[in-house]
Length: 600
Image (cartoon, rainbow, N blue to C red; front, side):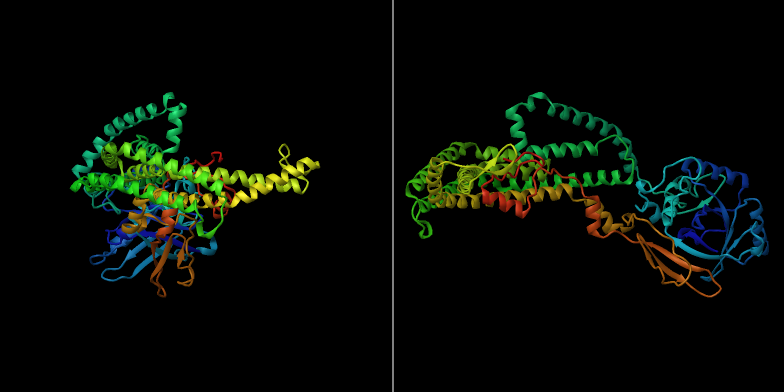
């Protein structure tokens, strides 16, 4: 039989004593958690283990003895350690020993009550696996969803493979709270036995965090209640709130702040990681917003932008006028329907004239508007970018109107031509059954249908050209807004805290999948497993196989995919096929539509 003994590297230089840990019978593994030093009273050790078992629901026991021969070996020490097996009865009884001044280890497992075929003690082969207790405790290899429910007794009895090891260390945190500076009757060696680092500033921050979070949570609840008022759900306000990207971003920011300042404790590491990622994302967003605000207010850049905005708007309107005059002639040598061409051209020229008048009417207030927009950057760079997207939508509203007019006219003609084409084939569209059925038409209906089809066919090129030009302009504006929204979603959803952990402390983020314990045999038969890898430290004849367990961190792509934060999600993602179909049939493209909203 092969026994696996998981030994913490922090205890390799500890003084001689007792091995305290948990025995996993399903895996034939012993997880050593700490070393109890001499002198001690056995009843006090048993009381300590009972308290740890009651708090952690892990069956902690004395697994054996640990002998570190730093000085000249004493003959009485070995007999004394062997005699402890009668006081702390455990099956099997481990005896680990490290020789003085050498790297050689000896490990023996004794079974006091075994079958007759294995009467000789110490016949079991032992595999010694070293692990970093601090990294195992802080790693995410023991997600709550993968662990059994905590019940009375041994709560981790059903955890298999290395998951039992990580779960045992994670739940035995109460054992690591004592250090060598305590005046307790039992002295332990573990990863925190040298004491816990503390800071006065950190303790003051923890003390003040509770009242501050309560106050901010109360203020945020008032803001949420004010936003849920019926007044804001009336038609004009609800319509505006659903169309502006700024309102969506402010709503998302309110949800982020509510999550950060929530007084409820995180139930699992996943919720804690989400709260930390949200906090870092908001702090970075606000920092970038303050940088933008300082840049705008330096050297009067807001005034410079306001002075340059009116000439740019006039230049855009002038270019649109030249484009319409080009379309009203013979664009690219194409012969258009002159009457329809002139009507459409003058109609769009009149809209441009109205837009220029509106821009010049708003020119005295543009600098003040930009000043307030720049001031909103203190709420975060994403809020400023959302306001910029809405400003672009307002400044290009005339282009949107041109696109809607052309798309509606083009869509009307396409649907008319398709209906008249079914008339020639003796078909019609059944509205109730949503299908094409056969139908008989008389001579007058066919004659009128032929006239209408001819008129629509000859007017289609003129309409299609206007629709094509304004659709390209509309797609240009939508592309600019889409890039802004992608940047906003990137800032909102990027898990910066998790990426920082992956860069600085990669052992904190590892593969949380099913783990297996390596079997004795060839040292290279199973060198790596999901989440961990094993490195051979010593493999000599007559000596136990010693392995070093190391944690495999998640790749950066998996970190982003696993801990990605939810974003606003207010902009649907059209496939290329759906986009081309909408453009061909003249259907309108609304980039601000919510997912699941009905499209026109």
